[in-house]
Amino acid sequence: MKNQLAKTEQKLALILQHATTGLAEIDHSGEIIYLNTCGAALLKPVFIAHETGENNLFPLLDQIAPVIIQKIKDTNGEAGPVLLNEHCHFSFSFGGEQIERHFSFTVIKTDADRILLGFDDLTQKVQQDSAIHQLIADKTILQGKAEIAANILHDIGNAVVGFGSYITRIRRSLEQSNAENLQKLTDFFSGQQTAIATVIGEAKAGAAVKMLSGIAEGQKNSQEEINKSITEQLHIITHIQEILNIQRQYANSQEAPERKPLNIRGIITDCMSMLFASIEKRGIRVSVNIPESLPVISGDRTRLMQVILNLVKNSIEAIDISAPEKNISLTIHIQDGELILKVQDDGHGFDEATGGQLFQRGFTTKASGSGLGLDSCRSIIENHNGTIHISSEGFGKGALTIIRFKI
Image 1 (cartoon, rainbow, N blue to C red):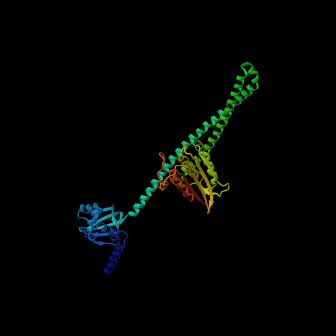
Image 2: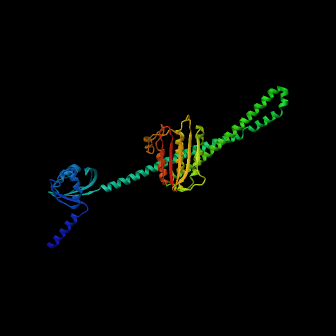
Image 3: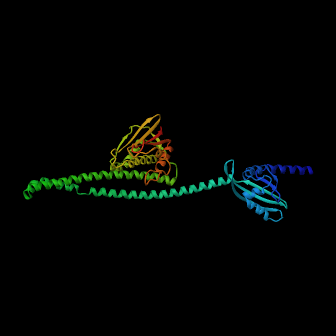
């Protein structure tokens, strides 16, 4: 019987010694009577960091969890639980590194002069829970942003539709103008010039016919120019609506953009048509040198249009209205298995220090800029397995942007 009890005690001692939770038995003064392997491993770096002896637990607890000592002192002499799963958070410097720890303590008074402490390191679990909560919070924020973006896109879409309606009404009004009647009146006066001359004189009759002819010709030219501008504006509105529709899909589904085979030439052509008004207004000469036949690349059309529009718009804004040279060039060539797009301008240019910050999020050289444009461009290009680089020889010497796509 005694042998059986001895074996049971040995088994119990072995289980306690190798338990995955720290176990420590102390007396009423905090002196350590027993400390298992896990407990010793958990407490050793804390002992060293706080420069306390390893024979008494109270000095250490007084620094990392003073509430435990107070609870122990407040208990009466009877055996029983003192506290259960008391969470404590502390940090310390160890090996030159700041370490943060989360411990859980359970304290049981076994008799008048013996206290058993069970403790475990919850740091990893706390960090995992914190990461999960942060992930949930980020997802909630993302969903909120998506809803806001969808509402904004909806409002922009409504504004674009309204703008298109007004332009269409202008076109209809022009179609109903009396330009043809004015031309008929001019032809009539021209045919009756001799008869009219007998009434008001030849000089006045000739002047009247000449004036009517000029008015009719001017009316015709103005109407043709307005019709041309209306056609271009409606074309731009169609492009904007296409972009808005795709962006709405992204905002609603929050899925990754679908990659399709693309011809970069078509993307550049569409972008230049959307920027035509700004280019013409500033009197900028744009040259586009793109081969008719180009290898296709896999990508998202809207995102790449966003990049091209941003880069060309930056070039337009970098060129002074009064500059003697106002040129922007876009060229594409194939080299070493790469499709290389270059955008060059005669704009302000920049120094080396500015060039090193262009792609930093929030950095901008514009008074009203957000500093998000080039950062977004780089992100989009890198998501298409490409690279983007912007350089300048200095102030007043323009800028060169090079984008490389792997074929």
